[in-house]
Image (cartoon, rainbow, N blue to C red; front, side, top):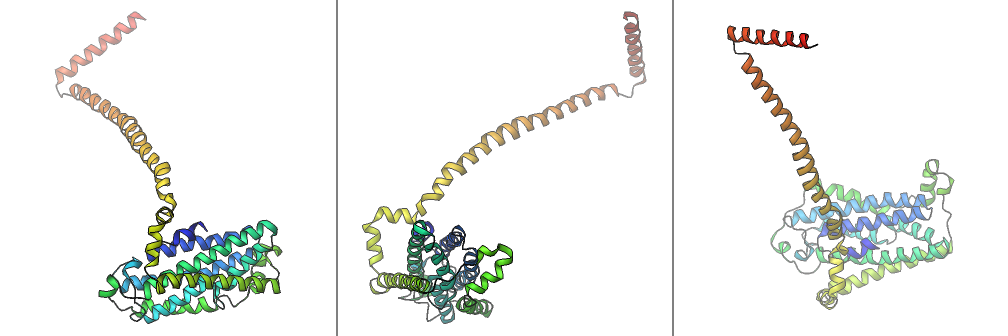
Length: 334
C-alpha cells in the first residue's frame, strides 16, 4: 500500500514500474505472512512474467522517443508502436488482476488466504484489495499517458522503430503473462510441497473464493474507470486535483520524503564520520603520521650511517679507536 500510493503520481515511466514492483513484493510477503506460501511463490513467478514484460516495454517506449522517460512528454504512441502497445496492454491487464491473465490467479490466491485468517486477516485482505485498486489505477494511468491521447514532447517529434531483438522477448513475455497462471494454484502447491511441507497446500474455498475473485476484478475495473475518467475523458482534472491538494500531492510526489530522511539520518552522518574521523583522524593523522614517523626515522638513520660509511681509512681507524676506548671504559667501570 505504501509503494502503491507513491506510484499514483510518479511521472517517470520506469519509476512507476519500480514502485509497482515494491508493491507486488508486498503481496508476496502478505502471502507468506498468512502462511499461503505456495500463493506467494506463485505470485513471484507470475509477477516475473508481466513485470519483465512491462519493464522491457518501457524500454521500447523510451527507445522510440529518443531516451525520454517522462510520461508527460509522451502520448499517442499506440499508432507508432502497435506491438509495444499490445504487449503493454497485456501486462497492464495482468498486473491489475483481470481474468484470465496470470496476475488474476496468483494475487487472488493471496487475498483469499488473507481473508480466511479471521478478523486480522480480513483487515489485511482489505489492505490488499485497496492496493489492487491503486495498482489498477496507476498502471492504466501509465497506459493512457504513454500510448493514448495527443502526442506530447518527444513523442510528437521523435520516433525510432523498435527492432525485432526487442519485440520478440516482449511477445514471449506477453504470452506468459496471459497463460502463466493457468497451471492452477493446486498443482503449483503440489509441486512446491516437497520443499515447503504440507502446510503449503491451501484448500479451495468454493463459492466464497469465487465471490472474492469477483470483488477483486470489480475493484480492478473501478481503478480502470477512474484512470479513464481522469486521463481520457477529463485530462485537465489531474492537474486541478494536484493544485487543490498540494500537501498530499507533494507528499506522494516526494515519495514520503523517505530519501531525504535517509539522507539526513544515515548518509550525511556516515559521510561526516568518514570525512572527519576516518579520513582526517585515522587515515591522515594516525596512519599517515605513523608512516611519516617511520619514514623520517629511516631517513635520519640512513643519514647517520651515511656519515659513518665515508670510505676514508683514517675515519674508519678513528671510529675503531673510539669504539675500542668505549669498550675498554665499559669493562673498567664494570
